[in-house]
Length: 245
Image (cartoon, rainbow, N blue to C red):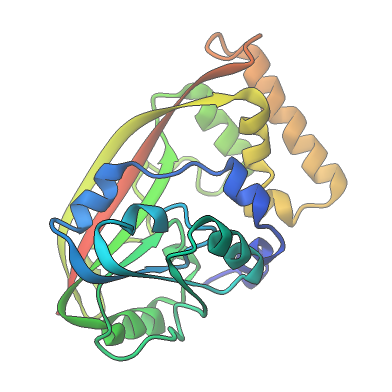
């Protein structure tokens, strides 16, 4: 069941999300789109972190996002993209209107059954659906420790997200890949990134301060981050590719 409070928390941020959240590796878009296509739709596009990878790979790029604050940032950053306010359960695109749908870092917020039905509706027959997530690299002990502070219920999962599956209604699973990469990040930006996470956004001031203090304590204790203004952050990107049945 989707937590509506957490899901709606992102409607209050825009610029900070775009500033602090990581982007995605080019290879993630390559796995979904083996050749240029006519039209591609990024669903739950946020500020366009993944949308920008679709430019140059599709003649027409559409971004659909429920948050007006997020869309405001996307429209300034990616003026050539057709940015529409909408949701996964009500996509403002005609039947069979796109060749590829991407969902980056958002599918777990969707109501799965109606969202899959809507995605299938807007895709051409045999069209592709790509689900993409960035998550912590299990080899990075300090980043995993920070995740346990922010997301204690899910931080101990094995890395692959439970929101994707071999079977989605109306789709055939055709590919799964993991991409390992590294981001050079400043300590202040790493802390700022946590301020854009749903559990931090909905926390009260005292809870938020306690979580920040706990993450700073992790950074101060680990040899890879202690006393450093910037450091290497390992990231794993999961890519699940499906075809419309």
